[in-house]
Length: 124
Ligand SMILES: [Zn+2]
Image 1 (cartoon, rainbow, N blue to C red):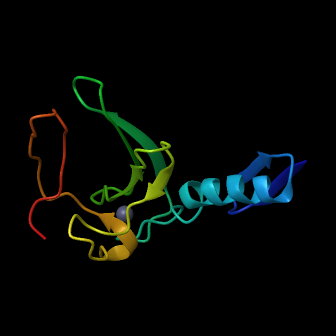
Image 2: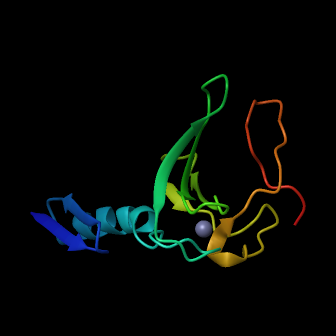
């Protein structure tokens, strides 16, 4: 069976599965990534885009939604579960504390890590 769900003015999700449970699980995974990021959590802008960023050595891929509003550029990042590569919204920081702005962050500067990862948040 196929299940479609319109989650915003611009997004319709569709999943296919043999059972309602399979469809439910697939829809839940899609909604966690493709619903709720239509509006920037910092400035309220409605022009957001999904972006990929790769480490220089191409070993790592970073999944994020970026606000396109001039002067904002806030991003919402997704993590990737190691065990099954499922994407999930990063709502907490490295210490497990809830991020402000619903997880949207404005980068204060850039810092290069050994892995070649690009922009990272500086300070708190
Ligand atoms: Zn914004």
